[in-house]
Length: 121
Image (tube, rainbow, N blue to C red):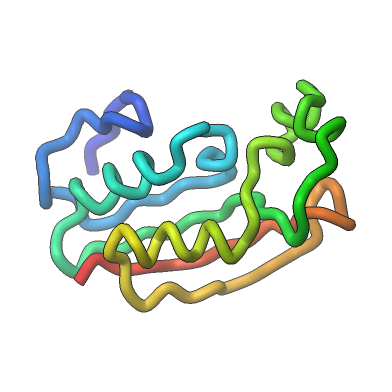
């Protein structure tokens, strides 16, 4: 195993060299989620696995919540709707996307913590 520090939108790794990517409640903080998934796809080997636990929305947030800095740090106001999140993975090329677990999020009326896996074909 090798650990490297880098930017989630520009991973310091060569193409097709990574077996597994694990992320825990980080992607919701990144403005360009498409770029994150493209980077993950780029570096994973064929058959490589993506395991993510992240906050997703169950319904749109009111503007006041979106602008709340504490809720951004709390992983809520940067989150996107669950169907949009899963669609981004499919559009990037990931297959066998499976939601493993969902638990109520910080804002129970608006969010869940979703753990899922996906593979690069």
